[in-house]
Structures are given as C-alpha cells and as structure tokens.
Amino acid sequence: MLETLRDPTIWVALFQISVINVLLSGDNAVVIALACRSLPARQQKQAFIVGTVGIVVLMTALTGAAAYLLTLPYLELVGSV
Image (cartoon, rainbow, N blue to C red):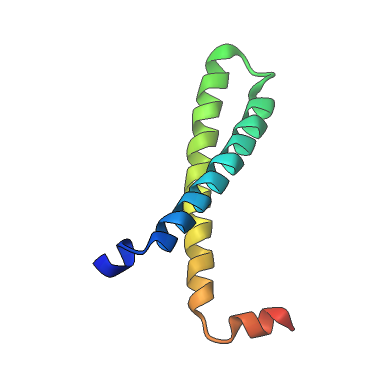
C-alpha cells in the first residue's frame, strides 16, 4: 500500500481525476441554479442544498456501481459485442 502511494503516476492520475470532477461539478451547479431560479429566495436555498446533496450521493453511488461492474469477469468483452 505505501509503495503505491510513493508512485508519482498515481498522484498525477488522482490530480487529473480531481480536475475533471471539479469541472463536472461546476456544470452540475449551473444546472441546479437554472432549475432553482424561478423559486422564491428561501426555497432556492433549500432546493440548491437538496440538489447538491443529491448529486454527491448519486455520483458516489454510480461511481461505486461502475467500479463494481469493472470487477466482473468478461464484462468488457460482453459490452464490446
């Protein structure tokens, strides 16, 4: 485990993933803001918080599901067919 953390390519990959995640999160924030713009001020804040939490939960769950699916044998072969 510690040997893996000493590998600079791991840190570069983590940085690249973080940058991509920030860019996609900004896109999600714009979509939430557009959806909330017609609500009254108090409801805008609540809707933005609920939308943000929803995105975090969904992204975490979907990332976990994708990681699990990648562990299944022959899934890439079936998907490519």
